[in-house]
Length: 235
Image 1 (cartoon, rainbow, N blue to C red):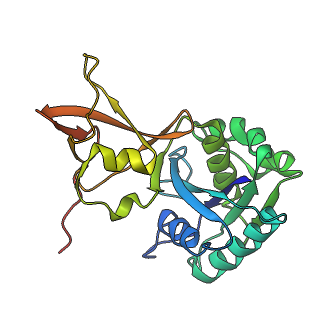
Image 2 (image 1 turned 135 degrees about the vertical axis):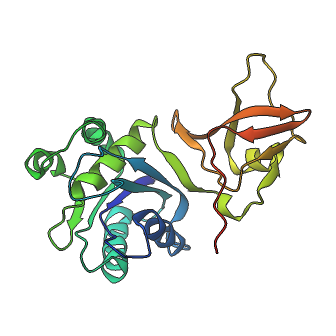
């Protein structure tokens, strides 16, 4: 069974770990109980006064447990409670096929500020937990809805992509399940042995429910990830 786990509002001013990082690290704890496929980051409406970048995360997992949804909600709640910023108000939502009911919520939250009153009717039948007031439930619901829709956001983890070198061959990315799409005018696509410069920031798009990496040709047998900004060197 495939399940989506939306998480939002776990960080705070001066807190080192972002919600995206917390979500990825929680996914890594699920080995043996569920298969962590990846996590998708979504940027929601920027005008919400309680946040800066307003990013929410959604984990994609698979589990054969009969009680997978309840188990994952309990695990996520315990992990977030232990690792979220004290000033945060996290929200967590776990959904399977019912995630489709949150698609319109996700689209709305990417365009305007939503209220808790608007969200409340949508939570019936969903597994949700709001901690310390649960302000993050709106973002968690939006992340689940947008991931279910499958046409926005970027994969922040997918098949171990963070362990890859900056320059990788097309065959390596395809082996992970990442679809490579050329943005060039001709019909050429990267050959298996072609090299791709990810600029150290491999973040495939969520498109058609898949991990898709747009590419531009930069030389013979050489490509680069379109729109990828080089990682800043740490001092």
